[in-house]
Structure formats: structure tokens, C-alpha cells
Image (tube, rainbow, N blue to C red; front, side, top):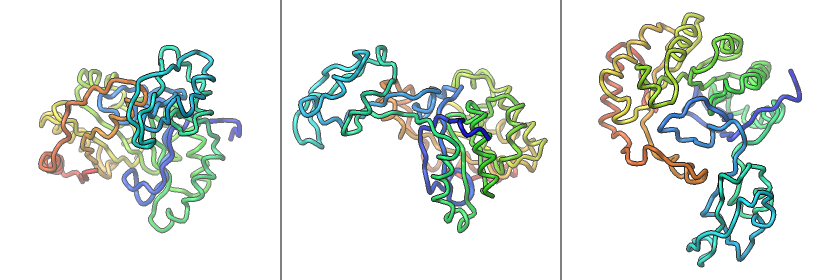
Length: 318
């Protein structure tokens, strides 16, 4: 294994219980070829580190202003005056010009309140394994392990493979959370180190897939078929986005596709749309396209579950 190889990580979560069996450590890698309208982790999309702006944490240029002095590109200037709940006073916050910012991160190094922070950190496999080792007692008790997610982890294929190899060397259960949108050669090379693939299917119609995610679905569906033929254990995940992919026609088509994959499909998870990621778009100063969409209610999720179960599939609401 190349000890110098690094991956771009934007989050690590311990004690997750929804992304594979048991208690797990989930590693989130940056970079994704899809642009799903409902993406709840916009910081995962770009393959490089980015400055995130947490307005609520700012203590005001009157009390600090260090970021204004250090920015080499002049991307920061004095901005609006707001009432700060943390400072309990009116303060003037900074304004970040995304066009001028090159994400060098110098401002994040001097911000005492972490109002400016980097989304994305370079880490080695050894560094991640040191973090994973802290959770290993919980894996043994729960049948858990490590889940590698994103973004799309296959965009960092070499690093993902190296991390999975090391996890298997340590006898850990591994999950790969993927959109399916990557070269089959990469999957074929990596699947020997994966116990369960969490596989997203967003829409069965390729043109609708292109509209909703930015990419067509032929490669995604073909890779799922190849994985099933290889005997790979699959947990199919279907986001339920009201008015976009939750029609009976699409759910039936998706269910039929899962059925055709055969015994490789161990579970179908349906994930209700939520707006918890909206604030993340604000931190990156991006527009959130689905702000007006209401999350599906329990009755609708139960209806979707019943419909998919009618195909003889095991279904779980995430």
C-alpha cells in the first residue's frame, strides 16, 4: 500500500446505524459526478477543499477581523450588520466573494470562532485507520464496521481501494455507498474488499435521471446488473422526492428492476426527502433548488413501502 496516498475527506461520523449493519464508522469522501437536485451534502460535490462560511459563528469584525487582513486575494470584506445571539449584540460580519476566493484556507487558520472553516481535509489511510480503531469495540458488539460514502467514493478510486483493503486486513465488515456511476473495471477491482454495497437508484427513466441528477442512468443500471451477476450483496436505496421520482410508474419500474437483480438484493431502503441540508448551501453560498418541496408524510412513505413490498422485496424506510 502506498503510504503517501491521501484521500480528500469532508466528514467522519462514528456510531452511525443506518448505513449498513450494526454500529459503524462512516467516512465521507469529497467529489461527486452527480448533481442531484435534492443533494443534502453540497460540500461533497467538488473534489477539492472549500471554504465554508458559518455566519452564525462570526464574532464580528470589531472583535476580530483577522480574516480581512490575511486573505491574499481580497475575497473578504466588511459586510452586513446583524444581531448576534452568541455575542448578544449588533455586530458587523464579513462578506465572502466566491469569485475571488481560491480556497487557500488562510482565513480559516486565523478564525478563532471557526466561522470560516475548510470543507475537505487530506488524510492518509493510516490516519483514518487510527480513527476507525477507536470504534472497533462497538463493531464487535453490534456486528458493525466501516462504511465508505461520499460524495461518490469511486471518484477517489485508488484511495477507496486502499482504505477498503486495510479494513479487510483488520477483519472489519465493509460497506461501499455508491451512486453506481463509475467505470465497471474500478468496481470489479474493488468489490473483493466489500461486504455490502449500498446502491442508489434515483430514477428508472434515463432522461429524467439526467434532469434530476445531471447524468443518464444506463451506466448505473448496467453496473448494478454486473454486481448482481458477480454475487455482490446489494442494498438498493431509493430517495423519495415528491413530484420528481415517487410516481407509481417509476416505483413499479424500480421494483421490477430490483426483482430482476435476484437474490443479490438483500434489502430495499426508501429514504424520505428532507431539507436538513439547506443550511449547507447557505454556507457555500449556493442556491438550493428544492426549497419549496415538502418532505413526504408517513402515509405516503408507507404507501411506497407497500407498493415495493408487493414485488416480494424486503423494504425498510430509512
